[in-house]
Image 1 (cartoon, rainbow, N blue to C red):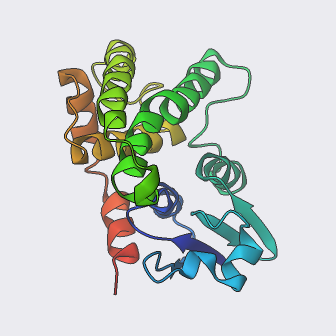
Image 2: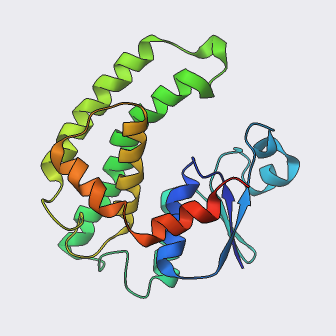
Image 3: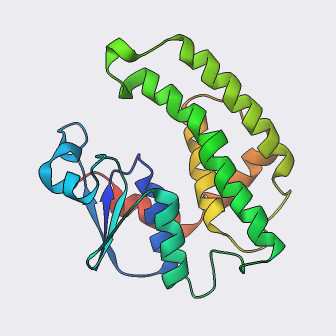
Length: 205
C-alpha cells in the first residue's frame, strides 16, 4: 500500500493530485504540524528534516515532492505524465519543473517563511517586498512561456502542470498577480476531477 504523509496545504497536495490521476490505491496520513507531529521520532525516522511530503511504497521511503512525482509517473503512469525520454518535449518539461521549483515557488516560500514559518526573531519584514519583486520577475517569464491552450507540453497533462498549477494557487493566496495567460491556464487545469478528489481525501478530519 502506498501511504502519503503530509497536510493538504503543503506540497503533499501535488503528490495526492497525481496519485488520484494515476488511479492507484493509496492512503493519506495527516501530519499535524501545529502539534509538532513532524518532529516526532516516528516521522523523523522517515524524513530527518521533518518536512513534507513523504511517500512510502511498501518498504520504500521517498521524500521531495518532484522526485516522488517522477517516481510515481515512471512506475505507475503507463507512459503518461512524463514526455518520452530524449524528446524535445522532455527538455521543455524539465525546464518547467526546474523553473517552478527554483524560480516561482521559492519567493512564495520566502514570503511564507518570513510571515509564519520561521521563529519570530528571524522574520524580516523587508523580505516581503524582495520576494514579491522576485516572483513578479519569474511570473513574467512564465507568462511568455505558457501556451494559449492545452498544457505545458501539448495536449496531455504532465507532472509540471500539477506543480505549476499548485504554485500559481499559492501565488494567488499570497495576493500576488499573475498574467492573463497564466490565469486562464490555471483555470482550465485546476478543474480536473482528480484535484477535487485529492482535496476531499486530504481534508482535515
